[in-house]
Amino acid sequence: MPRQVQFIDFGRKGYKETWDLQEELFQQNVSKKLANRSVGLPDGTGTVDRLIFVEHPHVYTLGKSGDALKEIDATYFPINRGGDITYHGPGQIVGYPLLDLEHYFKDIHKYMRYLEEAIIRTLAHYGLKGTRIEGLTGVWLKNADGIGDRKIAALGVKCSRWLTMHGFAFNVNTDLTYFNHIVPCGITDKKVTSLQTEIGHTCELNEVKRILLQELCEVFQFEIAPWSVD
Image (cartoon, rainbow, N blue to C red; front, side, top):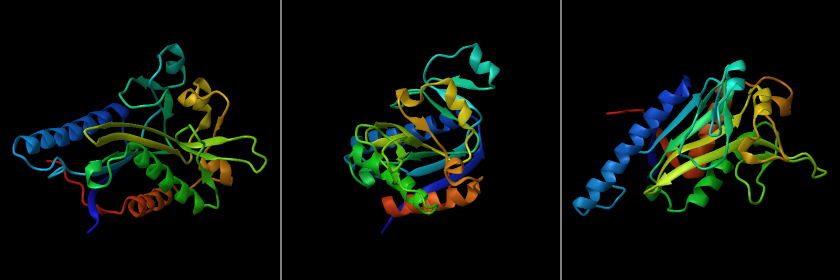
């Protein structure tokens, strides 16, 4: 029977309040695992898998803040995921899977590839061929001549006790000028793009979310369940 994952789409929500909720839910699962061990139950017994979709107001995660951020109406937030500095903002689907990988597979690299695969499959619905680049995370688009690699989705995750938090940021109708103020993910020789840029018109964000959620279900072989927080 497929694993049940509680899903919620918060729409537009601030970074810090979403971060705080992630931390709370993550710690709930950590506490459950510790309690399981104290009574001899398997670690994954009773832990809850959740998935959040959200759009954030303009924010940079990691790196140093400064006056320039105030000028562009952006904030800065230091976090505990992997990866370098990146940007979140309106028109971007940010996904936070809070999964217990003991319910699926204990392989963080496989987990990252599965997240990428769901986004690659979503791009295929719009006639785009997403790909991976060896040695780098995220989803990319490449020209036939091999020149002009463009990143359309970034990944940055935390995994502890096989529990995950943070996740991916998929540029749909994102204002790409905000990336001009940083070196995204520390990569200096690649560009950033969006679904809107690649297909030439604004996308219906809810449609993209629906397709992406469907592909995540297919890739991970889970089913969506009602959101419930005790």
